[in-house]
Image (cartoon, rainbow, N blue to C red; front, top):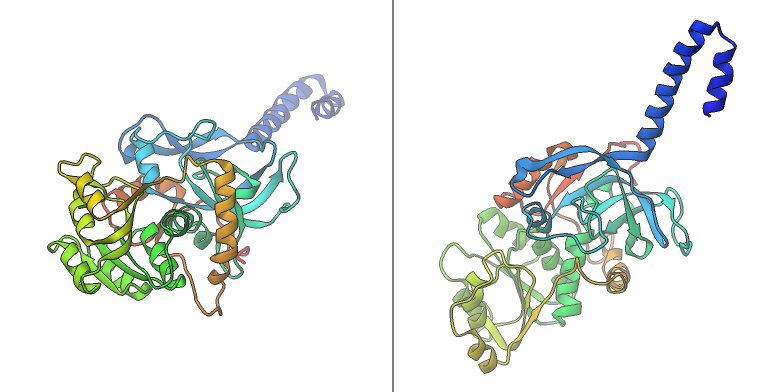
Length: 375
C-alpha cells in the first residue's frame, strides 16, 4: 500500500508530491490504527466507579480454538464491581478488561477451531473477562447461539447470571423436582434467573429481597413466597411456609450476616450453596456444631475461575436443557430480566446503580447500535 502511494505522488510536481504523500500516509496510518485497536472500559486504578472510563486499547487476536466476537451488548456483574475495587483479580491469562459476558457476531475464527461457528453467526459468550469492549476473544466452546427473536441486549443478560444460577441449582445444589429452594437476593440477575430455573425443574422457589418491587417481581416470576429481609427475621417465615420442614437447598450470596437464619430454616441434610459474601465472611458463633447436628452440606462455589473444560460442559448442558425455553411459544417460557440499558460510556453510572442495589435484574451496556440487525 505504501508503494502505491509513493508511485502516485511521483507523478505530481516535486513540491506537491511531498505534501500529498504526507497527507495520504497520515490517513493510511490512522486507518490501520483504527483497525488494530478498539474502545473498551478502562480502569486507571482500583477504587470507586469514577475511576472507570472508556478509552482505546489494543484489539485482541484469537488464539487456537478461540473466536473473535464483535460485541453489540455486554453487562455488569457483582464480580466487576469487586475487580474495580482491586478485590477480585481476573484469572491468570484472562483479559484485565471488565465484563464476564457479551453478545454479538462472530467476526473471526482463530486457528484450530472445530467448525461449529462461522463468520456472522449471532452468539452470546461466557467470559473470564474482557466483555466491556467492542471486541473480545472467547473459547469457541463457551459460545451459545442467540435464540430466535432475541435482541443482542436481551442476549447479553443471559450468559453469566443464567449459567451461574444453573450451576448453583443443578451441578452444585443437586435440586430435584418437588424440592424447595431458598434464593437470597431474589431481585438480582442470578436471583431472577434461579427463580425461573427452579420452576422449570419442578421445584418451589422462596426468595428474599429488600424492596416491595423486587418481592413482586419474584412472585411474578414464579416464587411461591417472597420475604423482605429488612422486616424481621425471614427464617420463621420460611419455616411457616414449609410447614416446619425447612428448605432443601439455599442459594446464598450473603454469607455471615445470614448464617444463623440459614441454619435455622434449612431442612435436615439440606444443601447450603455459598457463592458470595455480600454480608461478610467472618462468623462469630457455633456454626460447625449446627452443621453436624443437622447434617448440612455446606458447598462453596465460584464460576469465573473454573477450568475451560468445566465451563464448556456447563454451557453444553445449559444449551440443551434450558436455552430452548427462551424461544417464545414453548410450554415453559424463560426470559432475561433487564433493569436498564445504558451506553458503554455510562459505565460509572452502571456500577453505582448496582452497588446501591437499585436494580432488579440485569444492567446491560449497549456497545454499538444496529437497529436493522435484530434477530
